Image (cartoon, rainbow, N blue to C red; front, side, top):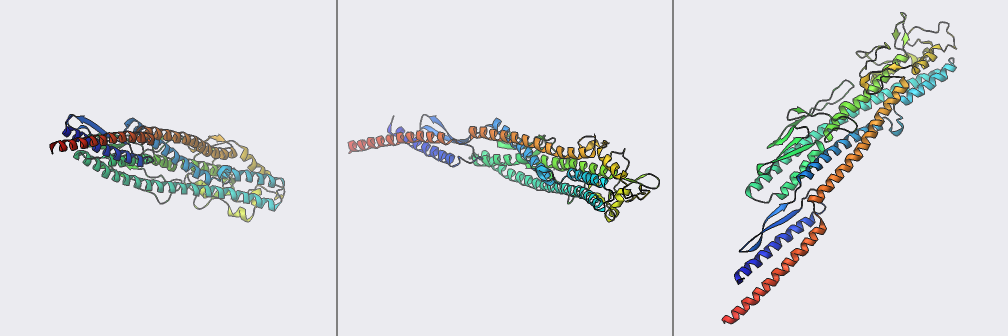
Length: 484
């Protein structure tokens, strides 16, 4: 080896070790950064200068990244559904379901039974009417709370859509930077890290699949195949509503003009939180509302009285204001009356004179023709009504044939089972996300032990370079001395 080639080799080694040391330093400083992929200094050799660093390579694993994005979307959707169900459970009174109509219906039955044994007792009559008022109040409050939950879900959908549009705009800027640096032959790795981080954030909102095109250009699609980004972001649009009632349908979310489907089931099919929010607003909350409306319908029917022609007429329970369309006291008509639970109330005449409940004269013709203080036939008839199996609308999501008390209990069970199954599924999706992220981090992340070992190797290379440099210095000194 000539002195010139030795000098070139030494310079190359020192340059390589400087680059490698800087790379290791960057890696170690990002050990805990989930959005950082490990860098590796790639070297090649040539006959003139030996090993030369040609580029800084970013570690990638497309298969594990795809799995991680899918796990993030699944878990985000499941957690959003569970959060909404927990909110519904809180509205119902928590673990005891203390705010649900089933609790107050049972109390009404008890009050009626006590009153039936002493029908002349005005105090017991007032207690029965008061218990009926609690039933109506519970149905009113549950209806209001459910519709408020729908408003909150609709508002959250709106803010999430805004966030998604902003993420897509940010993605466009970073994607353009990646393409620009790639075209210029510059290092795009930092921009690639940022782009991948944005894709992960987008996948929390809506499931994402991606394709890399020429020039390192990325195209994004939803899990359902709708284009999210191709050169420019596609529009994500949504029109929120200011208020909801039982008959109000929420607006759809459109991505590139295509409606985004809502999730289905307690182990939701939703990919990302947006589909779960649609599921809560359009399936879960309305499902419980339908059950409330059915409870109200049958409750009114049980206490129906008769007019002068013998036809059924609202008695103890009636509706506030104008009767809703489709409302019927026909016991054979099991059609849901949307919003009835929000309108049910105890008749003012019954509150003014509770004994009218005993006589059946709240609005109808008195059945107590002898005006007997001990008349209890109607009270026992009402009690029998709670034990009678009746038909319920199948679209309410629970049983179609049951007693009122059983149906009201099933309604609570429907929500609790939905929440329990969603909770179990959420544990699974959370574990899957954790494992997927861990596998991806093991493949592309920074291992501090490996970096320290690599640093020791670099140190040895540096020592060799300094030794070679010292030898060259001695050789040049000897050459200069011989020449003088």
